[in-house]
Length: 288
Image (cartoon, rainbow, N blue to C red; front, side, top):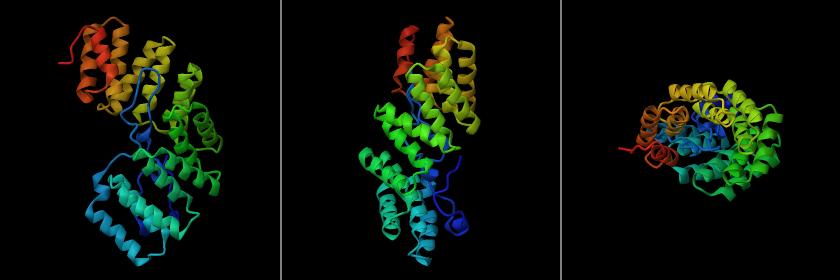
């Protein structure tokens, strides 16, 4: 699912440290359909090692060796972004774009940082700029679609995800996020198809399993839902939604003891995860 943000012919000297090259990691799927919300809606997965002094020094040496190469700034900006140093990331992307105003990948990377800073309008503007330069850039359609979806603008989001799919994207987030919209529209069969495609592209990501499981629940197919939720837990046991979803199946089966245990586990992972707290209340259990 990786989408490169710099020229592959130069990758050996630029080090492959770009964060999500403009949202390329499967782990950044957003999950916010039906009764679930997502702890993975933070669009950048912070990895402090990416912003370490050693890593930044190495990338700075590359820039110093060729200060007019915008790709060096793009890669270092990506490392800053992954390290949670957003202002430094913006500065590097700004420099890259000053050197090459048509560097559409840098626009998409800067948009990602703006998204993480809560500056959604700036993010939209940067995605628009990237697409004006390269109308076939699937990463920008997916990123912009996510901004629209999180703002509740489902129609333009749907159109952006569909455009990325039409372009032949291999990024499962396009299918996953379009599936969430189908799910919200109660078009569960289409949602399941999209979640399944997302799973085929990113089989180690728990989020599309959770999404598909919720659609199975909506169709009263608890067995397939249970299998999906359990597999999501196997892939990553630290996601509250997965445990709360598993608990929901137990609850629907009338097994309040197991439901309470899974809801408690979800609350332990995320004390603010309301679906789990609500579930505990329904089965007559406490969070303690």
